[in-house]
Each structure stands twice: as structure tokens, then as C-alpha cells.
Amino acid sequence: MKSIFSVVLILISLTIQAQHAAPNRAKEQFDIYLDSLKALSFKVINNPAEPERYNANYTMVKTLVSTLKLPNSFNFNFDSLKTISVLTSPDRRFKIFTWHVMNQDGSYRYYGTIQMNNPSGKLQMFPLVDHTHTYKKPEDTTTTNQDWYGSQYYKIIPVLYNVRTPYYILLGWKGNNVKSTKKVIEVLSFKDNKANFGMSVFEGDKERTGKKRIVYEYNRQVSFMMNYLPKEGTIVFDHLAPPDPKLADKYELYGPDMSYDGYKLINGRWKYVSDLELKNPPSVTDQEYNDPKKPSKKAVNKLN
Image (tube, rainbow, N blue to C red; front, side, top):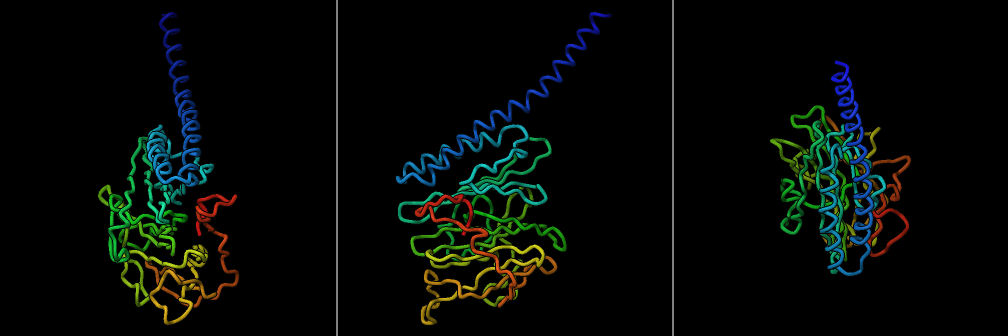
């Protein structure tokens, strides 16, 4: 009986040791992957040759998937990964990873994935496949993760109450071409085990009421502030205007005119408000993105 009891104690001890060792091994492997992701993402942004940027990106995608396959990877900290935007929803339902690769002609392609917070610890994700080039009127189109209107996101705003379908607003930067840049107010929701983008939750602006998402285009050489003020429940942004009324619709020439507009959350919908008076206007440096062609010491994922 004593020998049997001793064997049982040994087995229990070994089981406890194994349970403690598994998370440690996962964390050690995560640190290795994270170092690889940092090096690869630096090449994706900074290598002067387009083929090399895409080769690094291809390896980085595979490395990221391997990282997310680690047990309980949702709880790992990606803060030191500066060239990929990694956001966790305030309710911790999901993480979204987004980044871009710049093409030689000054255009961009976007990559990303959504990782769900699976209670089992196993990986559940929705890869984001950029189909930007297929959309002539992206504001009128709903999409899924498989035909995504690509963007690099910098803010998540949950809208979970007073709505039939809970959703999340995503504020995103979208480098466009050598002449213009865009910013996007995207809508993300989950239904039938799918990630869906776009929803008619905007009203009050004659041109944009009923749109699935909001897209603003402006001159690449200027900064366009778009941010969320939680106390006011308002997305606030610079009012864009052409340098001359005769140049209306030439969005690659548009820039801020020192006034502010916004969308205020009212009963689950976003109502357009113009000529906002801001006591302390958000600085453009709050979410300032540095053009990859103009590298600086600031993190590349701070968005403009």
C-alpha cells in the first residue's frame, strides 16, 4: 500500500510539473516568434526592393499564424511589435492584427487577421483578404473577411447596447497612392461564425446617410485628424475642403480647413454633426502615421 501511495504521489507531482511547464514553453516559443516578427516586419516596411518586402511579408504571415496557434496566445502581449497594428476589443472578444505592404508605384496592399478569444484556448481566427481593387463604391458594399476593404486600424469602439446586432466601429488609416491617402470608419460585426464588415448605421449627412462605411480621401502631403472622444461619444475629424471651389471632387487635393465635423453615437446609430466647437482639439499627433517613404523614429503604426 505504501508503494502504491508513493507512486500516486509521484504521478500527481509529475502532472503538476507538466501543467506548469506547458505555459512556460509556450511563452518561451512566443518570445522566439515575436523576435522573428519584429525583424520581418521591419523588412516589410523598410526594404527598398518590392520583391523583398513581399518575401518578408509572406514569411511574416506564416510566423504570425504559428504564433497564434500557441495555447492561449490571445493573452500574450504584442505591444513591442511596432510595425503591425494589434488591437484588443474593450470587451476582449477579439484581437485584430492589420498592416500594409507598399508597392513600388506608391499604392498599398493590406493584410491582417481577427483572432477570437476562444475559451478553450484553441485558435479561432478570420484571415483578412484585401479586395480593395474590386470596389468602385466601397461605401455602398458589405463584405466579409474574405473580401475585405483593407485598412490599418488604430481604434476600436464597441456598440453593444440599443442595437439589434452588436457591432464595433474601427477607425483605420488607408494609404492610397502617390497623390492621396484615405481614412475609414468601418463597421465590424459577427454572425453565423462569420466576420462581417459594413452596416448602415450612419445618418444626418445627406451624402452619406445609409452608407455601409465612411471613407474620406485627402492629399497625401497633409495630416487628417480622426479620433474618438469617449466622454462625448463622438468620432471627431477635420473638415476636408478643396483649395478652390472649382476643384470640388478632386479629392487628392483636399485638406483640412481648420473646422471640425463628427459622428455622435445616439441610440446605437451615428448622427453626423458639423462645425463642432472643440475646447481642446485632438492633436494630429494623437494618431500620427509616418509615411513609409519618410521614416522617422516614431513607431510606424501610429496612424495619420
